[in-house]
Length: 416
Length: 162
Ligand code: SF4
Image (cartoon, rainbow over all chains, first blue to last red; front, side):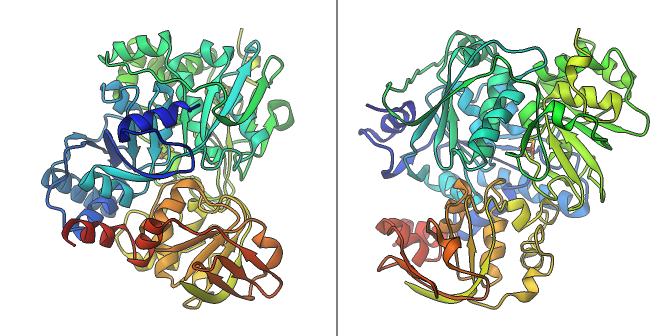
């Protein structure tokens, strides 16, 4: 009996593998970005590699775009020049968007693949039926040179989500609730597989949110089997090569069940992602900044929900609302749907597609004692700037509602 | 491989953002990373450590961002090993790939305090604190090879040319 992940790895190696085994597996796709790329190329130089091997490789300029400092610009130039010199197959330059989003919008992701990304949120792609692993710069460099990755085959943990999806509750609330109960190390080193009628009803945009945040439970990766919705989604981006993998029923090491029928919107409180509370417990907390975007919640579906709330009001005076679409495609779609106009009229600042203020380096760095509510994935101390700042994590709807009032607010107040 | 050193103890979920904040990543000035090591918890930490010291932590050490600078900062600061109840998935890989000794040891935080001298014996599979001897799982040979060669870079070079 094998999990989908064991089957994918077995396909690549050419023999049956089991969880717990150490293997060296071929990989199909490697990507990294302007941040991790710096060390990736340093390592390639030290490995005395002249040109990368045959594995498809992509570099994204998404982390500090446009660059915010002399050092950032200088190092990005190094990453760009090195990408050309070493023969990286594809370069997505500044303004295209976050790698985890652009990579599948551009048709690079095909179900059944093994993908490594030198970025911890690579497992986001697991929503498309691949094994997508976040790795460090050395793994990426070794992969570029040798086409392989050493790996302890991970176990798979099943999370089944059932029930009616309540008003004002989104994929973000569901995953925050799950993390709150399984804790920040609840899935450490394992692959989280989602199933159940709720995950089936969610659109692919929302499924990305679930997979993205499973990293915050320590998961090595996330996996969702592909269905009609995934197939249509991929076809839309020109991908028709569909290898399907399913886990056998008794291949899971652990199984959890959640019924979300009576769930309220959820908020993760400072300074740990698993410090999760229902909105009613934190409502009224004043905020200085609201960030809507990131690889967790910067997709079109998110922006549509935000517009529903912002179209009826104005951002509270002297509160900063920053909205950053995850990719240029999303930004252009949002423009043609009139969403950007709604955001600007409401008083939002709209940023260049990319990571934005998520990583605390630019375009909205938090000052001492500032409080932010963010749709991103991390609220560690100092993540978005000052060590003395506080970060609350929530859904785009909750963030948008909070922008109108200047305090953490239940989005159901603004949803008709 | 035997390592002996003075302990610095930390809690659960020490993220790579705590080990080295994002704002110090846009540089190749390695000494800057060392200077700001653990700044998220103790801004003066790097001035207190001595070569050979050991970090002990609870669950999920090195969780979060994939930044390899977290491992490099620890290694370049002279820390000889990190012993934790469990490690963030990517951090663990990064440590091995960069030749930093990482040892998983459930319950370790109960038996050791900051300032204690502790011994790690990877070959015989135990860690020894003033209070207890705890057993640890041995690594497969190729992991030990990577660590003892100082990391994946040398491992690759030998495989390619050796
Ligand atoms: S949006 Fe944030 S979490 Fe996502 S890749 Fe960028 S920095 Fe990382």
